[in-house]
Length: 302
Picture 1 (cartoon, rainbow, N blue to C red):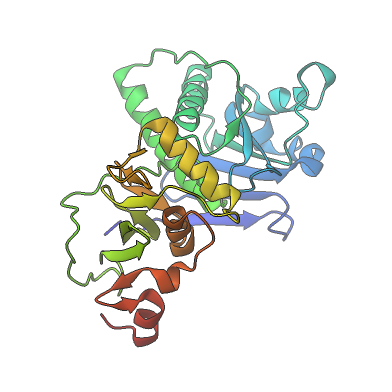
Picture 2: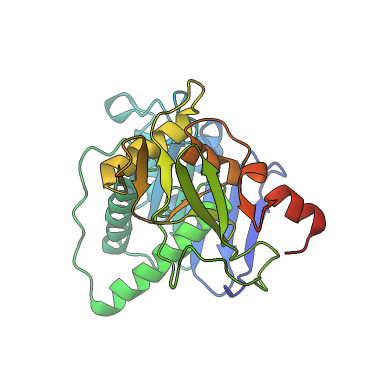
């Protein structure tokens, strides 16, 4: 079980679509999320004058599940963000920025450069966004203590980013200890948590576990190769990403793919759609002991 964390969100203008700040109890990290239309309001805030790392985020019309992002750093951070609204460095795509700074002015230029380089590296590796950074920032050398501290800061940054509704720093490939195709016992974490569900369609047989509120399709599952005409863009993108990473390979049955890594999805229908190659209702497709997830939910009993 994950330990609890107290995160304080503050709606500066009383509007969740406006300026929002977030902080974690007993940590120095301070995050500010603001829409592009509020950039002149943000510049008057104290955190705008500090050193910080930022992410510009915009919608991807072609694939809403894969946003467009740009990562940068500045000391002060606002001066750098402001340049993205000027002709020489203008970024047209973004509609929201998230700035990560420190409550106590502790972050140094070298530390924020490390965070910038780490963010670009991880975002490109995970491939959950279209990233506008063409070059990979060079990761500066930190002392052993500073390196450990910035790694902890990065983990907190990832948590706050997800709290704001963005999970593109979350690796979808999941390492699970003692994962097998066998049914597992009921978990104390939730009445479906940890149970192995099965989905059979055509010749494909796939298995799925719910882990930390993600729907993880398990390594060794087979996937219908030919996509339906109505295959959602997000499912198509997930398949192509996994093929590129070598996580989705040809099976002995030439009508199927085989998954070589555990991979997490945000909903059971997204997971079953990935398996089936098109729109699918995961609540009725995934089964445990012959009962669908929907039936198990109705009974609330395994």
